[in-house]
Image (cartoon, rainbow, N blue to C red; front, side, top):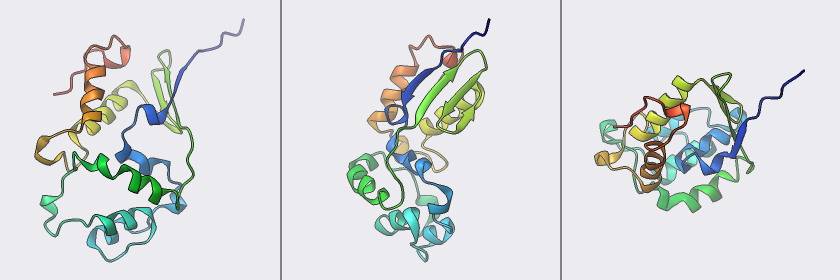
Length: 157
């Protein structure tokens, strides 16, 4: 008898915060020179246009994730439409295989937890003044009481 594995599927926009919207861009549509965009000399593509609107600080140590960046969401949503089509990206969990899929990207439990920690911390630059936006606090508020195997022995600090 062939048993079918049941996966839970959720549209990705329910789970991922807006600052990860660049994940839906196709590689060929991404800015070929992210460092050029950061330096303010190459404003091609989505990332280039974003950095043109919101320039990278001269002092790179001053760059932090803006906890109020969500206020620019409609502006960024309009901008991204030039480079990508809106689409549903599904979040799939398969406990038996220890696999979590976000669209085409596959993670095991450990690497998925690292992704969640990365969001909690504000990515590489961290959150400005260590202040997290409400949607990140809501993520933690949902994870803390979770009984899901995904978050066994998992703690966001």
